Length: 278
Image (tube, rainbow, N blue to C red; front, side, top):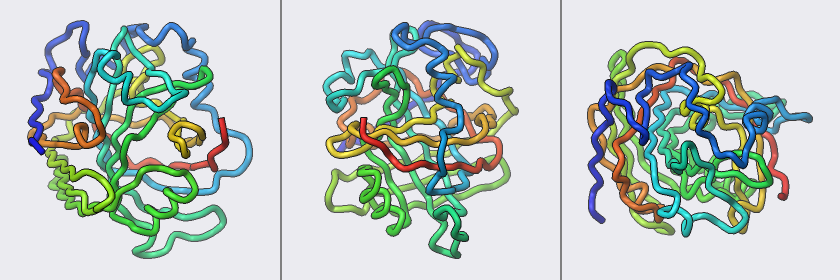
């Protein structure tokens, strides 16, 4: 499989394809006209009932590429529709570290509650509810892998990952070890820069990052699960190195657009609910 090399979009350039990660607060109002802004705001509300899982996410990097929707239509499961911003569909990759994984009412356990994870995500909606569909997910924790496969029917794969951090410089290397899926790799290094204000509703940042619904199940997209946390704390990110075959392994074409990057500014505690049929 050919390795994909991607250059970061220069942060001082603006055009109709992408904005840079310093555009917080500028309203672009390009969200899919079929979804009112109220639908995106409603998804951020804490669901009723009790979450079943708790996690802490940290060191996360958002990598995003814009696509012509026609390039992705054949990839989506039945029942899901591409969510677009200013006529463009978006695909993301998010490497991060997970800690304090635990079921509700139980404490986190040493070794069992830690993992490194990478998600390949496509932005979709169903029944007027915006969310994320994952063509693939990678994780180092086998117990979490089998739990997510069993309960959420998510396509998790076991992978080996190495993370290094030196101040605000981070690197993430991973290679899929599973034999039940195509081989894929990610090698990324980035530097966290200035803090950003919270993403403003109506901006591209809000569209990409403030997502609180995931579509899962068998067949894919037949269940919906909710998560809840405070709005994402962000910093701008400079990608220093990026090589990946994750998108191709997930059936997504090699992106022509430069990568758009944002970094997590501080750890985030997350609540996760059980999935329901849609």
